[in-house]
Image (tube, rainbow, N blue to C red; front, top):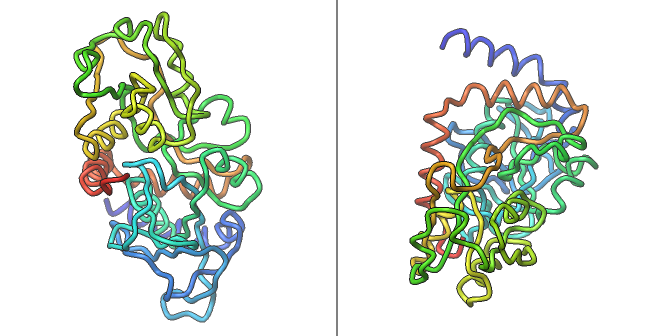
Length: 303
């Protein structure tokens, strides 16, 4: 533990210059736009490119600008009021969720001020490539295609793939993919949740939608018979919608998919990647699991 603290101290000192380049060099936001504290007490802000000071110094603090949907509970969501777990958004409201807790902790460990930008899912990769944001922390899997355009940390969370169905449907008792033959199954646009649907024999692969709130509405309206999701997402959806149920598959009878999620940075930004990875390595698996449990319990009813 002493060695880790020494390493963190050295890293914070040596990365002071490199992170200014890696994080776009934006000065810190003013205290007036600060959100709640991180799990370990870091400063957070809702706007990118504002100025401020850190630790009583006249020098501007570095920022760590993170992009996420803020519409993918329990990983991330938008809430009306701020709390100790949330970060103010530039436009309106606050970002909350597991990804926010992770981003706050990483920013704290890197000695940076956190800025969160709310972006559509399909806008995240272009934003990190252009430098609009420094990192994507949004429940994103490091697929081979994405690794062509961005660099990724090791996974920060891993789950399992399930289906969400109406609780009063016979599918609530399903145990294998074969039970969904001939059914209308829907996933999220441009994600593995959509890609894996064709593993179901004889499935009616519906047109994917942009977000889970839209997908849940389609399921409740009877347009879809099932939605694909990772277990934490499904748990959050069902918690907010008790008329829905989760289908977990028997061993060897479910989806084959990579359910790890990682943090993406701009391709070639090795300094930032190493800094984020070093900070991530200090957060143990038990802490990560507990944060997800907490996020599921706190997500808004409409999350």
